[in-house]
Length: 388
Image 1: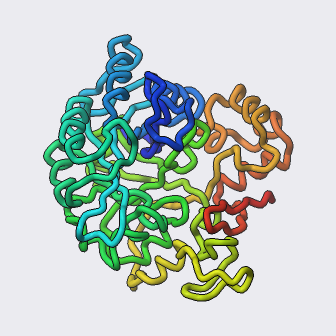
Image 2: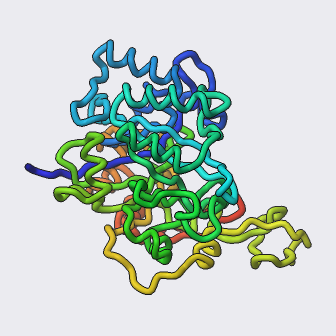
Image 3: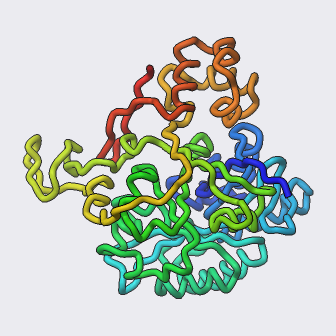
């Protein structure tokens, strides 16, 4: 058995279905299932993608057409292969039961179209509109976990620190055990405003693998955050084994934005977005309304004395975020190196300099090493990167 490295982004939304009807209201119209698979395979270089609106019946219809046309094929170990990329079928669900302090999002993944369809049949009796993304589910979090496991699925709390609709941002006061069965959790998705070092300040998270995903609402954002995994091949079973570190399968690196760049890293005034201390009046505009940032929330929950061994977390931004790297420059890079993963991980500095300026080549290499500097974001505004 030989294990190889594969790149995975497991949180991608669908903007429109095959009938041009909205799925994720805030998603781009070009964000269809077919376009996601083409973009992930040919341009991004992603080996595994999780499409988390696969519970929608029209999305399943489009997938059946892709299989019938032989453009896609189901894998024996779970997942559906399209060109170089394996699709993992998922659903993002909003939970707000009587034990929750507020709404939280979770990701549910299933091995094949049959189990995903069975989940749809169960879920449609417990949501208002099965044709839309991230719907409010009427039931308990544990009942949802039990159903996912009944269908041999994976259960992962999503972007767990985001101030809105997340496990620690809204769902619980202090512990995930307030609402979830910790033995039925397969991993933890960190979100854009935190990284491994921050999350490991909370001891109850130490047993879980950490995931870094894009939460893409457009084709360009696919691969905004992702991970590298050691697998025998890209499939649902291998993904499950990697999350539980079985037989040498594992996550070997997380690639994500510096938390300073996240929209909700700092606590800020809700009115003018200036930084504020918790519970104080904004000195800039006098408002008493504020949003608690991820860094402050983690500070409240921090209780760890020791830290587990983790894969490296490399601070990185999408190529489009780099100043002076516009669409034409990116197109030129892709024409030479093939995919964004090749540009970010494999192209030498000298090869990059033959295509782009020395300053831009230096920025890509600096980012590859995780050394790109950042200015903080907050209050719904992203931070900014600084070129060397």
